[in-house]
Amino acid sequence: SGVGKSAVVQHVRKRLQGKKIHFISGKFEQLQPAGPLRALDAAFSEYTNSVIQKGPQCILETKKAIVDAIQADAGVLTDAFPCLCKIIGKPTTTPVEIGPMASQNRFRFIFQMFIRAINSLSYPIILFLDDLQWVDNLSLQLISSLMTDTEIRNLLFIGSYRDNEIDHIHPLTVHLNELKSKEVAIGNINITGISKEDVNNLISDITNMPHCLTETLSGVVYKKTGGNVLFVTEFLKSICSEGLLFYSLDDKAWKWNADTIEAKEIPDEVGALLSRKISQLSIGCQHAIKLLACIGSKCDDSILISFLNRTAGKNDTENNAQFSILDYAIDEGLLKREGSTYMFAHDRIQHAAYLLIPESDQGRMHRHIGRLILEHAQDEMLDHVLFLVVDQLNRGQKFITKEKDRMELATLNLKAGEKAMSLAAFISSASYLRAGIDLLCNDHWEMCYDLSLQLHNLYVEAEYCNGHFEEVGHAAGVVI
Image (cartoon, rainbow, N blue to C red; front, side, top):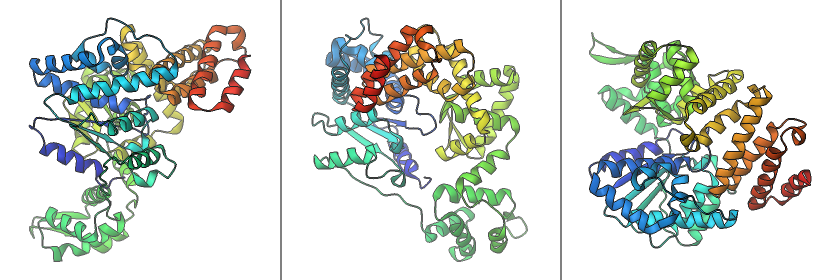
């Protein structure tokens, strides 16, 4: 992590700006999985915005291509990717209910037809999905189906992952091996840390000094960071803020003492260094960053303002001041802002911010965020944020003590399990249903029979589709 995988792809993206292509991207998250297909949904949200930006003619052409390809099954597609309603409109009919395995095959087929349709238009597509080591099973299946579809010709798929976080039985490894066995052309670029010489070149370039004069500093930096690009940049920022690397106006040159830097107690792990950096921000800025870490890798500023208002009891004027403090976090390289969206500059920064929240408070924050989203989501919009709401509340469920609230969350888990089932995301479905079952009270068969029966029946069905037959027998035995 931090060697620059995403940065390489984003550099290519910048070089392609203005070209007649759709470059779309999504990111899988460790801290906020938020149900299946979230990364693909983010990518197709970018695709939708890209189509809209290209004007009415592009919208009409795209709509016609999609509708002609999937016809009456548009609801299957928009249930998974609501953003596409901006192009093809809201479906007037609901998808026909079929069995889980048939539903899985239908969804894969419609997804392939959709990709073929948009791929046939005049703009080629580059799809970049980041952090595949955290990919959900359904997304992985859909990606594999695209890679083996010989009808898709104008699509370039780019995926990045940390090879030190997957092993030979990881689903990503299994799928990659299957693709190779089918002779799918896969190009591999192994990005590692930079060499000691590269670190010296970087420091020489930054300080505008000859290479021979920066070797003492680069030697210490390389020894401390191991050539990890993220660690190198953060380490240099750290020693600057500590006054160990400074510009001398008298000598008109950068100065440092390599022995002092090496002796200084500076964290020798990037996570600890980032945590210390975040801890040096103002209390208000820290709170906003920690809240963002609980929400995900990025969040629209209007939503973040709403959360800050409710969690801190502040008015908009006070929170606007807090957002100007967030600009300092941007200057420090911790956050980025694109349009109205704040996002972490790297997932290691998000992880460091999240770990600064006391473990006893993490669940409370997740519960609060889930309740806020639930309260503000209109009935017709709840389905669009269902996975996000349920994931947040599940992570804070031990702080939900009232029986009424626990039954409400069990019902939400049932809805999330049903939706995941309709998307053929059987692993996610079983996870939500199991969480719902665990929320039931001891005498649930007497107090909430219908809810208990629905949770158990669908859980049995989901685990059967997952091939977990021992669990199927156990769960079915409870019902019988």
